[in-house]
Length: 358
Image (cartoon, rainbow, N blue to C red; front, side, top):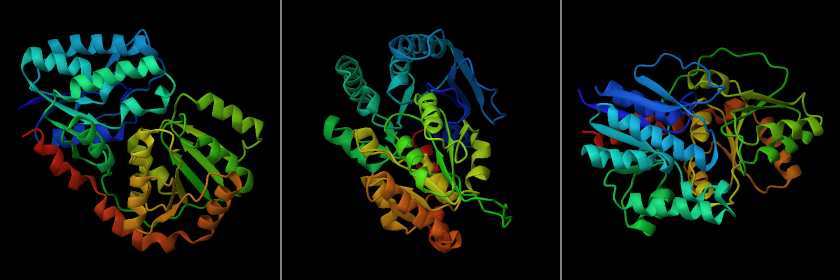
């Protein structure tokens, strides 16, 4: 049985993509160990059909975190028996690359996003230069790699002349039971990071003109700031922060929503070319969507009429669109949502994934 070690810098609680990959590899007969890190507030992980390990860190953000993490990961990978390494994103690649060379084992790379084009690096010239140097050095020396969208694959092809396959962030298709939960108000849902340029402030401010509840599922750098923003606007009766939710529970929560939001702003190439989990999670839960006017997002609505593109980022205009979509019976979208969820199924992507490890 071949042994695969997968590494990522999060705490493994809510990373759906990595969980799906680990499950698929485990079900295919590989021995899988998923390595992440432990936050002081990290909750206990649920039982999984693969092994997990979380590195304890002194530092939790910034340069010192990335340095410490890669040193600890390097030593961990060097001493653990494995046949294949799977590195997720640029922030794990340094340790994985050098261990793969020292031990002469296969390395596979999964690029979840354009790491060097994240909004957190805008205006931080020195930090961005370091990450660009690493990207340039490592990516041209990797032979097995895949990413989440066609736009990102084309970007890497144009920049580095490397061919990345696309393994999209599709969920495992699940059926909806006919049980209807009684609600006093309609529910709008956002799931994902509470970070810069995700449009969280726009979602919150639009609730001034919407008679519904907004449920924000996730954590991030702007969580405290957004909580204070809700308090200042006196929207505590409409906007609810649900925190991190284990991916095993996410579907049951999402399917009760009436509208799913994804408002990433076109401030950087990483967001412009993104194709996030949440869009397909909404569709899988048969929830219509209101999403940003971005290339990969448009492709989804061009293929299936399952919602609308954000017309502008003006608060009252956004509120009008939300109100319009909420006024349409949810059942109106059912036929298109069912067609879409059949295509956007992880089992189709799984076949491409396994070809990297054969």
